[in-house]
Image (cartoon, rainbow, N blue to C red; front, side, top):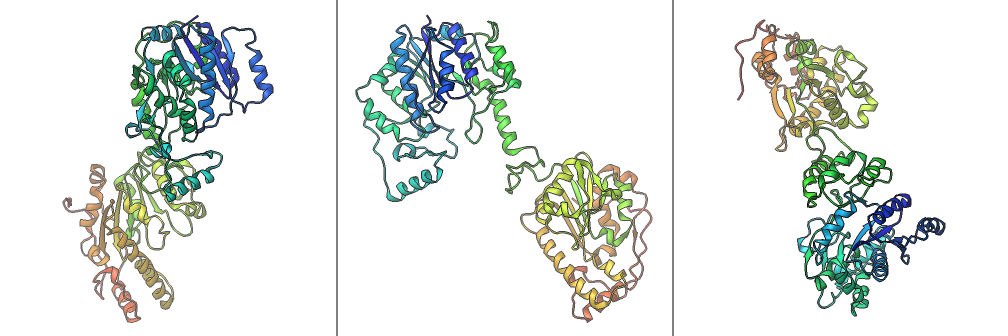
Length: 566
């Protein structure tokens, strides 16, 4: 019989627990099983009968186990007492769960512990030294009382904690104890474990830890410091936790990762990971090489997994990050351009920009009556529809999905005060955005329309108010986008310089194909139109100082030397 005994705490997947227990026994290790009292009696009886007559397997007194409560400690106490009393040759007791899986031959663990007969392997650190407490209590778990289950009676748990804080109630830590914390999965020598279980002060310690929060992570970790002469503060069981403090599950595709760790045991293993169970419980002595356990070798991979889960990929949203600004790891994934006023001032601007830049140039994506995709498609990458109703359900999600689904291809779209304004702050905060605005250009379609002047005046006042708010956002100190704003009067006075500046953002491709300039609409009479608005009491200030008499503008057919803005 081996000098290593196994205590297994089982509460689910009893078929896998049976398989693992038989593997331990086949390696010469006696096993004591504790089955959670919540397991139905009939299920428990059938499980126990499967080991009938096996002298290497025992079942301890059952306790009701629940996360964060005393029952888990009581279960390990009962099972450990039975193991020590039944198998006197056992020198080390290894605590495992039903979801633990041996990664190396049992003989490797036996030999490793035989070479360290006086060493206790238990993660044990003071509360000031543990970095893994996530969203929980540290020192207060030892100084407050926790009679209510955190999972089942959360309201009472929180209210009782708040009441104790308010009243200044503090529990006295028993004399001689310095609270320590660590993984609940330990491997203790007979001397240390029996000293803990047989201590005359154990009733006092047990009474205290019964009301400690998550005592299975502090009971043995604290008491081992009183009796052990040689503690290695680490667990021989590989267990990884995510950023929320929840344990990682290992699946079949983690096979090579588990091999690389060189650890003796891993948890939690998914019960249906058939390949893992078949590989590590098979008759293959070469499954893992005999090396020092080194879970740190795979820490880098887990760190990347945590980063991917918490931060994600730039511009790709998921439910855990979407509702909160600042958690999106980049608002979008690719550079894009927003043009405001250009399509109103130039004829066929979309077609011209497509030809010059090679980018995907859309119309007004946020127009009130529907999405104007390039070439007026009704459906594009990612199944995005031209339905205004679907788009307006979540306009920000619509834009970020559009950029993500078309990544690798520069997207451009038209925008104006007549569009849905819900994306203004998102674009303004986005470093990938290039925003070019000709303020007041929204008045050109009004000027060219055949509407009653009273209606034009009201509409002009409304659109100017909307654009003024948008420009205020674009000039905010929180803006990360590349923003250029020209008044309409400033732009039409010398149009090629700002156009060249905008095209510089597209790189050499735009320079090679810039053979003709876009055609500006006929603005004859536009200055008088603005004056008429002023005469009617509406002040169109966003256009700049536009002359009352403005004839047609003659745009040069070829651009001047590129005008670069540093």
